[in-house]
Amino acid sequence: MGPELNPSGEGAGASPEVLARLFRQIRIATRREAAVFRAFRRRFGFEVADAAGIDEKDFEARERGENLEALLGAEDVPVWLREALGRQVRSEAILLAHLLRRYGEEGWQVARRAYREFGRECGQEAQVRRPGGRTEDLLAALEEDHLHGLPNQAPAFVLPCPGGFEVRRAHCPCQRAWDLLGAPAQSLCDLDGSWVDGFCMGFGAPVRHRALARIVRGGNECRDVFVKKRGAEG
Image 1 (cartoon, rainbow, N blue to C red):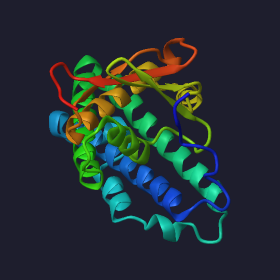
Image 2: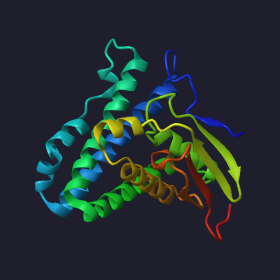
Image 3: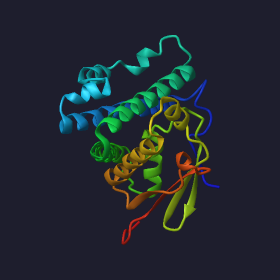
Image 4: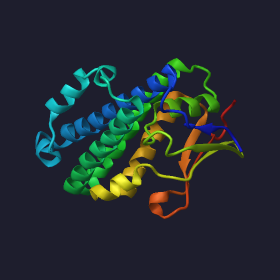
C-alpha cells in the first residue's frame, strides 16, 4: 500500500504546516469559484449575477478578505476549519447549480474551460514551490492545494501502476452536500476533474490525469490515474 494522503491528525494540535495548507486550500477554492463566475459573466454579461444570486462585489469582498487567520478568534481550530471548508463546498455547488441550469450545454462548456484554465494557473503557482517536476512532486502539490472536502474524511491511497500512480478514495466528502443542495453531483465532479487536468498542465510534470471510477456515478470508490505521457521522459 502506498503512502496515505491527507492523514488523520488535522485536528487539535495540528502543526502550523498543516493549518497553512488548509488555509491555502480554502483560498484556492474561493478563487476557483470567482474564476468560474467571471468566465460566465464575460460570456453572458451582467445577467449572470441575477441567475447566480451573487455578484462581483461579493467576490471582491471575499478577496479583500477577511484574513482567514483573524477569523478564528477564540474558536477551536478544527471546528472552524470544518465549517469553513463545508461553506466553500456548498457555495461553489450552489453557484454552479444555478449557472448550469440557466445556461445549459453552453454553460457547461464555459465552466469546463474556466476550471481547466484556473487549474493551470494553480499548477503554475505550485510548480514554483515544488520545482522538481516529478510525478511525486505533482501529487504532493495537488494534496497541498486541492480542496477534497472536510479534513480526515477522505483519506487517499497512492498505488503504483504502469507508467505512474493511481490514487484511490473510498469516500466522497462532497457528495452528501451536493445531494442535499440538489446540485448536479456528476457535473460538479467532472468539473473538478477539469481543474485537476489543468493543474497537471500548469505544473509541467510529464504526466496526464485520467479519472476512472467515481462514487457519484455509482462506483465503490474514486480512482484517478496519473500516468506518463506518450514519449515523455522522467
